[in-house]
Image 1 (cartoon, helix red, strand yellow):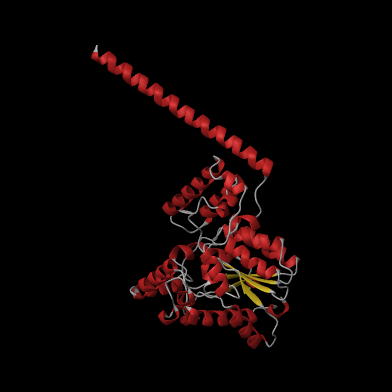
Image 2 (cartoon, helix red, strand yellow):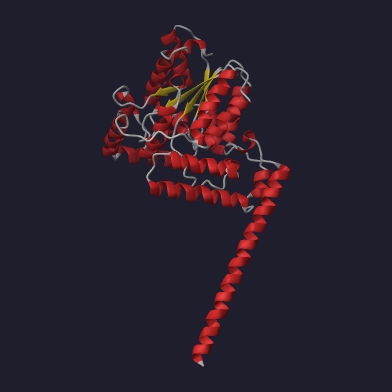
Length: 374
């Protein structure tokens, strides 16, 4: 009798589990159908609505000043490292023509695929005076904590997710890291398709944070090195965070030697050079920009991590030679790997930014047709 009761209990439990799972699947399917229908009716917000308020505030400055003809687009590696004033002066000296007035549109966290979406926005709707764009090549974002952000939600359509997966598959990452990345982007896709955050996303209305306002006040050309921000910031939490980053770097000198070695060895490694939606879009945007009288130059920065190298260097290798610059070689640019010129293991300090900006200007001036771009 006890055995019969146990069998009945197991049968009821299995039935309950199946019903619960079936109900959950129905709920997910219903949520996805409703969500997709809502997005079809109302459409996606434009990039100029979803991007970081700090970046959009800097873009407005560029659009309101038609004398600016050159912009730098990228993550904090651009924001912290390229000084427009130094770049403009060094280019004038190297080329013999004071033809450039530049502005730094770097924004922390502006990684692929988000960065290429922003570049597309700039090429589609170029600021009035801009005829030269430098675009940073960097590592692919893992969206571990920002998958709920409007910037990432904007990318997470089904075609967008498919492009990300194909780009991950084409990258030179280890297999387990590819699986991890796909899982992170799948979570971001499901977050959007099941309707989470939809009302806030469609009715997007974000304001500048006080820290962003402070940064804008200190970054008249869009550039702000970490050591300069550390001296000027009135935000105690920001000061503590930046100080801790700098102190960790000072205590770990061996990592810098490893980073140098990674960048020296990348030129001799056997890379798999595969096309991807990311690479194809970069090539397309260079052509589209040319058609509008705008030159795009893809920049490989120094100090990339191993994952940054695995992703960005093979992409760099496949881009047209007349649309790319490499500032990452420790043998050619040893000052950019000198501890005295670094704030941390991924960013130069203000002294390093002066060196990097000069090298960038000189390298660009030496490119074929460089003087004819702006």
